[in-house]
Length: 335
Ligand SMILES: Cc1cc2nc3c(=O)[nH]c(=O)nc-3n(C[C@H](O)[C@H](O)[C@H](O)COP(=O)(O)O)c2cc1C
Image (tube, rainbow, N blue to C red; front, side, top):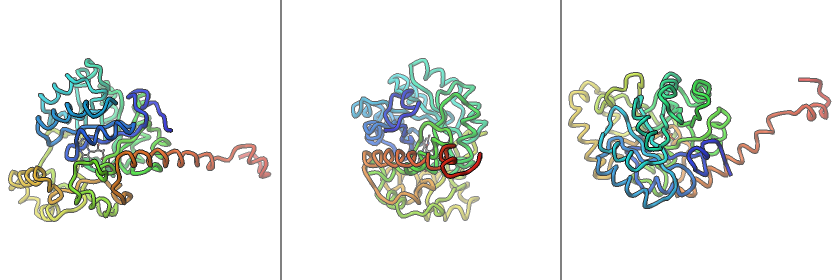
């Protein structure tokens, strides 16, 4: 089994977090990950108050394990946040902006606070603001992400916010990636795309199949989405959506001025296709990890494989270190 300080802090068995994906979230998916020993997460971005409240009510019925509820400070739905506080989840997470005094409000009800950051400066800000855990999200990630790669970002955030624990996000789809994240100083991982390609994910089959078919180099950042649906107040959190290309994204990327003018209509198109379960016609949000994902599996199977692969990868680590006695036996002189 795997065990890190994150397991003790969040009272989970496996240091794997389901990314709270606003556009691919459900109580059922969150509970499946929590019941498999990880930390399930429920997203709120682009969702109605009723839908998030329903998931908050439902997840408690589906699992007695810890889970997280995610909020986007500058797009905050005050009622949903109040509801979140009232139900006192183990973890409340924030993304895309500094949560300010919401950290204290979360602490006051006994929740742990986790903040996703894309730069060292954001990490330092969140640390000063009282975050208990930081997610360092690399630019390979699915969804809205920054520029710096996971490999470069994680160790820098680890150093900058120590002793606050850091979780790595982006570019990780299997146990080798999890082992690598540990070597970078992370104590857990936050995975999105891998779980979209799960049987339990509330995503159309076309989206799941697009992920299993995509190569990493197919998955691009689409600035045009910020023309169509700008997230307010992301100053200091520059962020662009990463997706597998769709006709919609390609078409409007070629005429961004028109997309800005037609913003309301295009946003309406995204919302109505999403509500009709056909969001893949507009967006196929995914990370570069898509290239490494080839099967749609159950959450329990994904979790089982992640743990086994991580243990196997970590077991190889000593092979890369030559001990003094090995050097002696090999007849080599000092270093
Ligand atoms: C479809 C999708 C939606 C996302 N929505 C959110 C969100 O609402 N809140 C959030 O904190 N992160 C969100 N993310 C980003 C994830 O937290 C995470 O950083 C990312 O999925 C990691 O990259 P990966 O998808 O390659 O594993 C989203 C990611 C995806 C793929």
